[in-house]
Image (cartoon, rainbow, N blue to C red; front, side):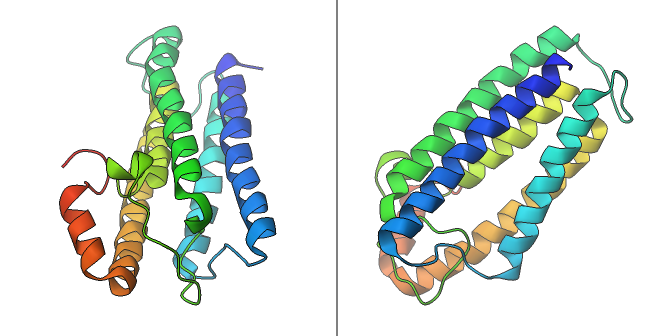
Length: 190
């Protein structure tokens, strides 16, 4: 099995395990569903699954469709590693700092406190940022135009989900959320 395939699968095992553990723990602790039933969240889950599956598939072949090799595979792996590590660190910090306010999608019947500490003092949407880092990491690792196109679609999808979520958060937290938006960037840099 190619090393790039092993890297992607190993990364996904860790990344998805963090997500699943948080979801199972929180659902057990609160006794409530933590997953919203909104269409946007469902499409996102399907898209993320498709992107990851496409990445694994493309990594498995020696010369997959869409490969544009700018650097040798070793250098591409070295360039992707900081993105992969940042994805894991930011993802973990997001899940930990959100504590019991973590939700997957919007659940209008549940009200949670506004989280502004930890990584949320640097980014309003760090978990979404971690996905963008994953898109970049796999695109750099595999040097593939198909993944670049999917990454652009992924960014548009994530940006739309963030806008929807931020409208919801502003509707329930009011001026506190407006002030938070003024202090903290949507992604990481203003």
